Image (cartoon, rainbow, N blue to C red; front, side, top):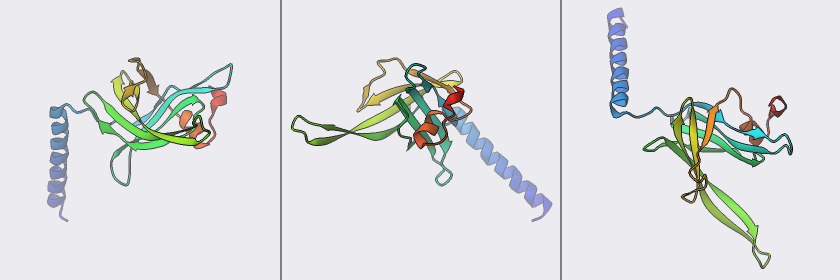
Length: 167
């Protein structure tokens, strides 16, 4: 390819990218989040873990915005991965949780419920609301999560070295 052709191709690519940025700016859409955020802490008294941690990323295979996340209630048991969707005031992602319990007759029953997380911008971090089957269980008090340098809750949920000794 000749030098003028390469220059023309580069200018065309730059114009296309600028046009896309202008479209995003005109529409006012916030870019999808990226990075690691959380508020997981360990109780000094009991050693229990509590809080929420999420890693926002773009799936390399599909280019879709994704979230890997864990909710720690006593411990960080499971890491989930879900696609992130845009909402009017932020973003949302969800998973289905199966609750197992024995009924009065001693029969094991299972009940599925939709667990949704709604995140809205809050300074350098996010506010998170948790909904079970559409009901806001944060009682209107959103959790604040801040940027993190390394995973803690997600590392525990994955069974990796947690680094909790340093916290």
